[in-house]
Image (cartoon, rainbow, N blue to C red; front, side, top):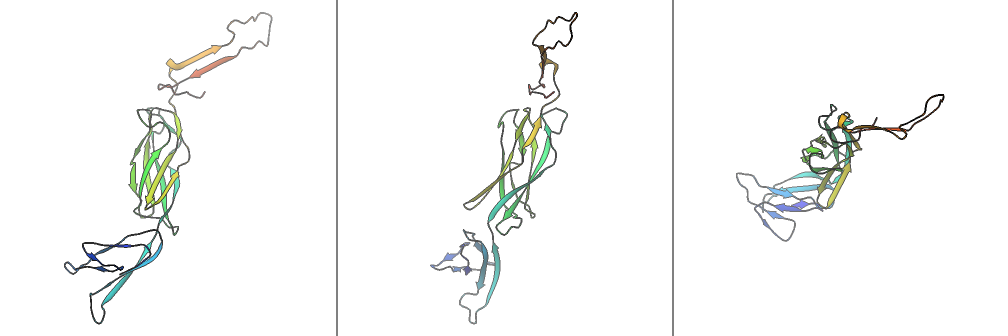
Length: 219
């Protein structure tokens, strides 16, 4: 008998019109599965020996919770650098999953995605892209950078029933490598200046530099 606003499902059993599961024991063990629905709270699951007189009965209390929130916690290294830049190319990103009672939620499936370039050598890689929250509600994924200097966000998304929750990391900066001489230029607007007997003569010049992957390098 399941006294709960959520629901129940008997395993390999016969179900009658009420919230009663009639089950046969196997090796002295009988099983029923409590299925969470749309209401949180405490469910009482009781088991009674069929047609026993006096009644032989036992019960257990089950706390029914819902996925409520995902919180971004931290990144292990920042900023990151593109591949072969000499800067950190990997970092661990951590989120925490929270239930409807405000406590860490264990066993929740989560998927990770990211903003920015999505394919090719320029894109970052995530490992894993899906995971399950630990006892403390923590979920983690590791970023490996590609060849594109960019600012990205890591998105964690979870679903329990019809409840869908997602959270974004803070912006994560991926900077370029050192300038490559193939992509360094220096130009002045006026290349011929008369200097004899004159002072305070100015010329506007521009320096630009890119790394080996043609990412713009700040100078």
